Length: 230
Image (cartoon, rainbow, N blue to C red; front, side):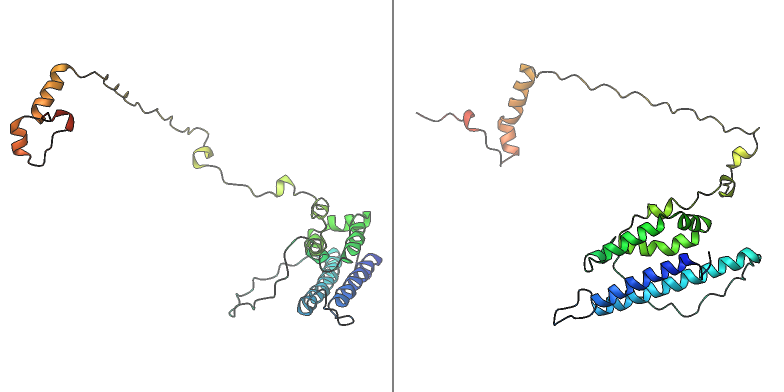
C-alpha cells in the first residue's frame, strides 16, 4: 500500500471527518459555550493533521525501501539548543468521548477499519505503522491490544544474547561450594526460683535497719510498718 492507495484515502477521509467534528465542538453555538476549549481543539486539530502526514510519508518511505536497499544514515551531532516544550494533551484513555460524544461513532468506524484483513496485513508488515496509530487509538478509547496482536513477535535469533557468567565460560571451572556457618546454641534461660524466707528477712533488715535510715535521710518506711499509737 502506498500513499495513493484506496486504504490510505479512506483513512485520510476518516481523519478529516474527525477534525470537522472537533472544529464544530470548539465553536460557540447560539451563545452556548464551546464543548471543547478552543486552544485544546486547535492543538488536537494540528496533531491529527501531523498524524496523517507522518503516515503518508512513512508509506512512501516503505515503498522506496522495497525497491532500493535501505542506507544507514550517519550519526547526527547533538543539538546545542534545548528543545522547546510542546503542549501536552490530556492522557486519560478515551478522554475525547466526554466533551464530544460523537467521537464514539468515529471510534467504531476506526475499529472496523483496523479489523479489516488488508489493514491487519499492512500493520503486520511494518511495526512503525502501529506506533503511529497508537495515539489515535488511545484518544478514541480503542483497546491497544488490537494493534499489538497485529505485530508479529520478534524471532528468537533476533533477541539480544547476554554474556555468560565468567565461571560458566569454561566448563572445567566449577564454583567452590560454600560451607554453612556453624552457630553456637543459645544457652537456656536460668529457671525462676521463689525467694526464700531468709532472703526476704535479710532484705527487710537491710532496708529498715537504723543504719539504712541514717545513711538515707529521704527514706520513709511504708505505712504498714508504722505502728500508730492507740
